[in-house]
Length: 310
Image (cartoon, rainbow, N blue to C red):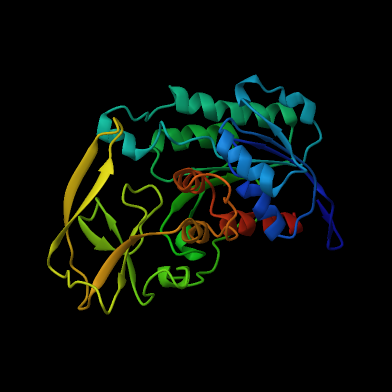
């Protein structure tokens, strides 16, 4: 792919494109793109992608795609939706843990895209929490074992993901030691400390992941706030049936006074190492969803950088 330090422009196929995090990663890795073709059915995600990359090609349902028209493309990138495989599904008893079901049918469209297009290189991503059986079936289908990388190495969030790729030589990125206070917007609240409430730990802990139901709540040191150490606070969120659920969480923070606020869309973008206001133009809740469904850009850029020596 490269010759004497020069890399040709790539033709890229991106099923399950979302908000084009892969496109941002290519740009950040300094890899020029000749043609970028994507498939995505989420209209708001497509709006964000088109706003940022109007020159790219946008299509809809992967099940209806004829990927043979992309013969000669260089790179296939994507991560089929993990919704059906998610550990969160186990709470309702309908989590898919085998290679049967909608989740694997979606993954098979990625495999079909690879086989029909004949892309020389591929990168596939999914959640580390999917079952071992599904991981094994993905590995069999793609012919490689996954590399597990935690986004905490390049961002202010813990987010373990599995990456299947035939790009050679990929290693773990170096830890940039980024903490949540490093990504908070100025002028929003006091910035010395920040915490996120998660149901898993039943208390206040450092930011855990974008998938948590309380993912947008942070507590920050506030000299004028109310002392909450050892007290319980009440948070309300909606379950799958849209019913409001209120739970109490005991606060065990260091000495100090804390106030709570939602994380801003820009802060959530920074957690995913996206440019500020990348998702601007859709409603706030849709921004949270789109960002959470996306990739940690700097992890993808790190992996794609290895193409330069392939």
